[in-house]
Amino acid sequence: MRVLFCGSPLFAVPSLEAIAANHEVLGVLTNYDRSAGRGKHSKATAVKIKALELGLPIFQPEKIDDIFISLIKDLNPELLAVAAYGKIFKHDFLNIFSKGGINLHPSLLPQFRGPSPIPAVILAGHKQSGVTIQRLALEMDSGHILVQERIALTGKETTAALSEKLAVMGAGLFVKAIDALEKGVVREYVQKEEEASYCKILKKDDGLIDWNKSADMIERMIRAYNPWPQAFTNYKGLRLAIFSGGVLPEEGDFSSARNGEVVGVDKSYGILVKTGQGMLYIEKLQLQSKKPNDWQSFLNGQRTFIGSFLGGE
Image (cartoon, rainbow, N blue to C red; front, side):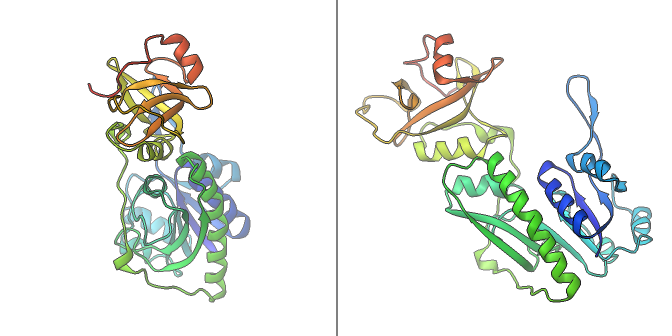
């Protein structure tokens, strides 16, 4: 199959590698380089870096206009394969491809349509997730489903770890779908709109912890917002990021404590913070302008942390 691959972040790299190993990739469409770091050096996407390693032609248009459409049309592509590109394609571009366009989405569609399905499934506390290969459609993530694969969740996954696992699963599923399209044996089915749910673009402030919420919900936030935007709170006017923690199995008697109060430590778990329901323990954290620390090392540098209150301004 003659494929134009489209994607940008690290999540899309396994799919590019798998498709290139099994089909003819005519080129790679990816976002343009962006300035990054203090020196504002130009930084290529992870997909561009991999495409260069594979010796594939690279396209980085700021917009898909008539000139670019004509350029791609001359390549005589059969299929557009998309993984985490972040833009919706119009009919005049999709019509170039005789086999149409398909997209990898890391959720069990129609659940969690939108840009952040992996954090969303962790936040929701679901027991399973998965990947879906769907037809590209003008309405976000609403296309017919070609193939889908499920995975059980342990309740310990971070977004970083689950993204890596689903990226590999998705790569294999992508090749399976393309093979079926090439042989003309693919079966498509319509998504059930009544079962659809949606997720939003993550913002930096989404990670701010409300200590009136339950320990279970805050623990899910810690995992869902790892690596970005990170779950965080305020401590003495500074940002305090929390990288890992959990719900204390046996809470003890802290009924007089206020939500957000650092009540003590448990040597087997870590720093204990009172929440709206249950006790959260913190294992690894980072105070603004400091290095990440395990809880013991953190307390060595913050002698007055026990008994303080987290949150507020």
